[in-house]
Amino acid sequence: MGRVVVGVAVSVAVVACIVAAGVVTRRVQSRGKWSRVVRVLKELEEACETSVGRLKQVVDAMAVEMHAGLASEGGSKLKMLLTFVDNLPDGNEMGTLYALDLGSTNFSVSSIQLEGNRSSILEHDVQRIPIPQHLLTSTGNDLFDFIASSLKEFIDKGNDSEALLGGRRDLGFTFSFPTKQNSISSGMLIKWTKGFSIGDMVGKDVTECLEQAMKRKGLNIRVTALINDTVGTLALGHYHDADTVAAVIIGTGTNACYLERTDAIIKCQGLLTTSGFMVVNMEWGNFWSSHLPRTSYDIDLDFDSPNSNDQGFEKMISGMYLGDIVRRVILRMSQESDIFGLGSSRLSMPFVLTTPIMAEMHEDESLDFRDVARILKDIFGIPEVSLKARKLVVRICDVVTRRAARLVAAGILGILKKMGRDGTGGITGVRSRTDVNIKRTVVAVEGGLYTNYTMFREYLHEALIEILGEDIAKHVILKVTEDGSGIGAALLAASHSSK
View 1 (tube, one colour):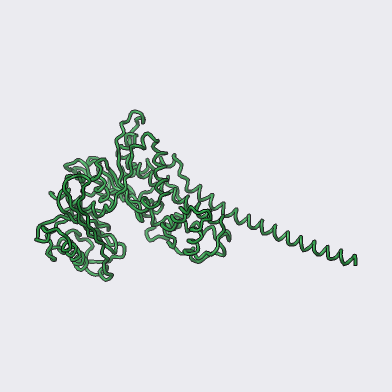
View 2 (cartoon, helix red, strand yellow):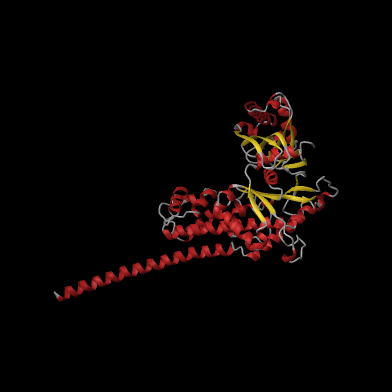
């Protein structure tokens, strides 16, 4: 009997040891997997590092590239395109103006009524119209006849009696496709993008095509300004605040423009304007510098994109790409461990995680990060994720977003440095900050990434203060504008109507 008891005791002890060993092994394996994930995070944090020193290098690089782009065609990754806008709205504009905004498979028609008092826009009507699918690959006449017909219907529904009786009106045309601008009111289409493919339009003056279509529909309307949306944002900002000297769009895409002295546009020697200035469209999404903190995820994203080696800055800062960078980091972590379960094929789907959804995870303030869990399940099909892993996802979002916002801040200050409005005296300035008279400087900002994403906006402002210092930063004001491509285009039509 005693031997049996001893035998049972020994067996129980052996089983206990085996179980304990199994538990220890699982814990060791779990710690090993977690340490691999933490290593991936640390590598991301180091690669995305944006110290004040590095940001100042980006500021300097932006200013230098702007200078090079103004000196010669092809002298920089920044195109620094002339817009021929030399007369920004000043608040004295009067009358009823129209605007067309064509930049996607929808277009908008707008009208505004002005009475000459700054900040007083009496009426603003807008209508957004989808373009029938077949017109995207039809003829130029078909497309612009449809647009002109829609404009006529819009006018017929309004109360512009003069236009209804055949009186002439001016129109601003926001055309967001690659165009070679010839004057403030004309430009040749270089190529179509965004799903359009109308062969007989390439190489033609888009303003002439629109005006001929409006004439066919019985409209007495003249296009007095052909612009892109960034220039419209600057015009609207300047209308409300005369200290507005630059504009940035930071949404799905990104771009910037600013007011430059004509004598600084060396590649167009002899260029004269009555104001002595001209708005320059930077196309800053293509900016590049070795000082930009690039990661392996950025390199892979660029390689997989249809425009590899182009738009490098845009791919690090714009809403089109931030969500996908986060997805790529989560995918890498899922390959290193099982903290996201057995993995999901959806993690390998490019752009399945959009930036607005990523921002929702980033700004999840619940104690258990339930929004993060819901989104991981809905978007990636990952049913159950530990609290620790959810916190990790929020941290990834934070690192990627913070880098983007701080780089945008550096880009803006690069523009102001080129203009001599950053407190250093400009690109060649050597004066100390104590003896510089700082001008109040306003930058108009448009785009959902800035207006709707609180953390992004806060990180951007934080970086401005860190780079400039509080004393100088208080003179740099970012002002949100809305509908620069509509109202801004109409305002520019008014300010250039006499030309």
